[in-house]
Image 1: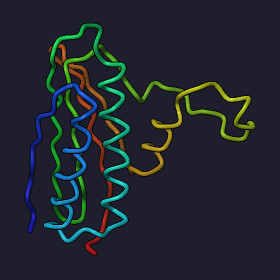
Image 2 (image 1 turned 120 degrees about the horizontal axis):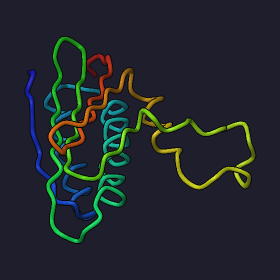
Image 3 (image 1 turned 180 degrees about the vertical axis):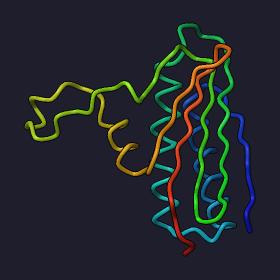
Image 4 (image 1 turned 90 degrees about the horizontal axis):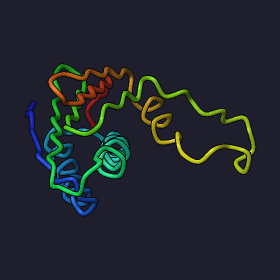
Length: 140
């Protein structure tokens, strides 16, 4: 069953639990493997938590939209927010050859997202960030 879902989350870290539950239920309905479910939740937790932690300069409530679609073996995830302009595509990958105590803090999450997903595309339009991530997957 190919079902597209859209979730609207508040910019509150407590929303990550609801996001994970919705994503796991959706993956099950799509007959996606536990590994894909795990990877998808890992990627979305990283991306959405970064938006919540770093995307807003005020304390007001904001909405983060997450769309999931699975068609013809390709998973498409779109995360859209009205936070500050930030393109993860412009972040320099960390030097993972350095010992952990010599690396700067941060940057590993975006690196991990790039490793898990097949493609990332970023756009900034009408004051909104839009990150589109794609991955070829098979059913469970």
